[in-house]
Image (tube, rainbow, N blue to C red; front, side, top):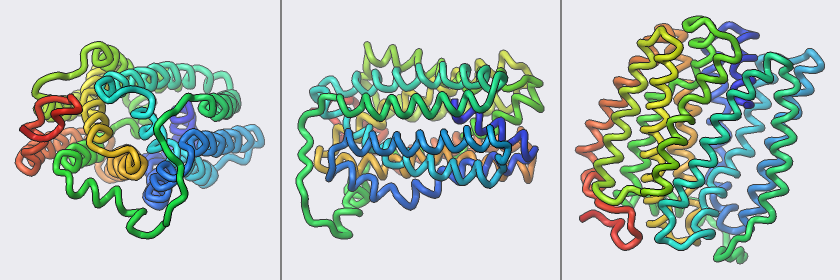
Length: 381
């Protein structure tokens, strides 16, 4: 909901594709600055409290957007500053939530648990943008205010989550502790390959940041159309994640990840070339479905191959190099759209994704040879 409202409002204020790119940059910078600290906090302190505090910060950001809009003093810079605050909270929330999942289920069920959490997330991503788009037509203040309330509710509910297995013991803090996650990933070719593949695919193929332009100027719809476009990738993602919850990938997992990323690139190209609202929705549905396969495989590999005392820091690095690539990808797309036009920017991103797949197959053969997500067989065969 927040993404739809912010995207539409800043483009309405500025009519500048670069402003949409700056929204992505404003989310990337705090992640770059804070993620190592966030990962350390996730491993050292109660993960429920870390997550709750982060969600309260996000609630404050949404409330500030509501006040600025209601008071009539909303500007591009205020939106960017508030998005920065929101992203700072998100930076602590994302890796901590990822590290919580293995403490909830036995290791053999982790692939299905990751798919289940993805299903819940995608259900929210479907309903959120669609609802946010329609609510924005009624009142932007209502949209932002509801976001603030929902974040506050989440911050309370997370505290009651029954978590087992994490020990929040005080220990010496030094540079080695902070950079342990990077060191661990660097020496694990499977995790390094999975993260690198998703990083560059999303960095180049991301088109969601430009959806306000497609909705208003190319497909000739309003905020409601933007909400539907925003929800479309989640529809495909939800369909696939529900299937993966029941039938987790069992064979040729490495190959499946490369195929899914290639499908992501092809769907991006189809969306760039489409001038039909229905065809654009279909392309985004396929984009979301293929991305989900890659995400479930990557997150499962990362969690299975990482010991619990390091999961927060490794998840933080994973979020930095993959999660924040969405925001940096939005900045890339916005900058290229300002220079070359919106359609060429997305088209070049899709082609770039296919090139990334081809290069990664040669660079990370260990990932390509992964056969199973079973905890006993996560090493190359």
